[in-house]
Length: 311
Ligand SMILES: Nc1ncnc2c1ncn2[C@@H]1O[C@H](COP(=O)(O)OP(=O)(O)OP(=O)(O)O)[C@@H](O)[C@H]1O
Image (cartoon, rainbow, N blue to C red):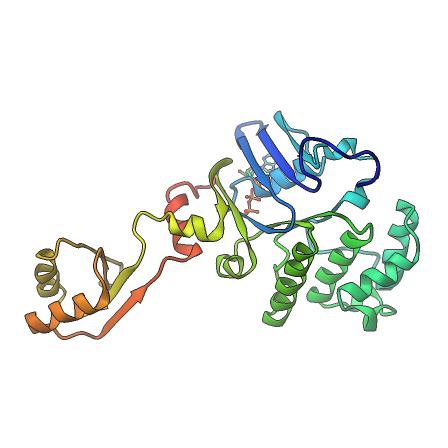
């Protein structure tokens, strides 16, 4: 890596260590520590108000921490000699001068950052916006604005990309494009840190997750491991007009039976064929019998339950 950026920390690795931000009466981020590895997409997840944006802003030196620090490749963002060449960031839907074309918008940034003009054309091509290069920003759709924001972040060909809710407002095709694009950046060995509320999308996109709630770390690790760590894994979902009879029949099998708000039974510790046989033996009519595997959404809701309050 250039600029003598060597350190015991791996190039492109993000290390957040004891990071804390206290506003007047709220601990927005509370002694938070985690690492983000290069070559992987890391989903940064948390309920509303968990402290995700504040953390990302501290990483980018836009907010001063009350305590702790965050480094990229062993250096604080403020200490990077040429930050745009190391870290690209997309914090909110891109804004630009309304009358300026997408290409000119990027050229202005290149000029200000001392980057060659051709990077504007390259970055536009990278996000598929070349056909709209000469169109004015005011005519861009929300999806095109998001792409332009990413193009701006890629101008310095950074090793690390940080995005806050990049899928916000995108249509399904836009979301699919974003997924492929971010995965390809990780495959090139870059570090990709993405905050999002869209848990089903994160399950498709992320290799690792960092889950926070109320400013604190709740869980960190590869998505598969985090899902696999669920106390109750696979469960059987049953709808029946004779829930009491089936529950009594299953008690003998020493299984756990819970009921959701619609009266559907959620049965743990047993497989679907066993439930089906118990129902047949007890003469119970079934309207649904399905095996439910844990997913990121279920894990997230279980891990952050009761911590999603507005602070
Ligand atoms: N500038 C500020 N002044 C005072 N409080 C703030 C400020 N910025 C954030 N907060 C508070 O800090 C907490 C964390 O906010 P933050 O925006 O970081 O959460 P978030 O996880 O990004 O939320 P969301 O998912 O809703 O965007 C919230 O309680 C918020 O009200």
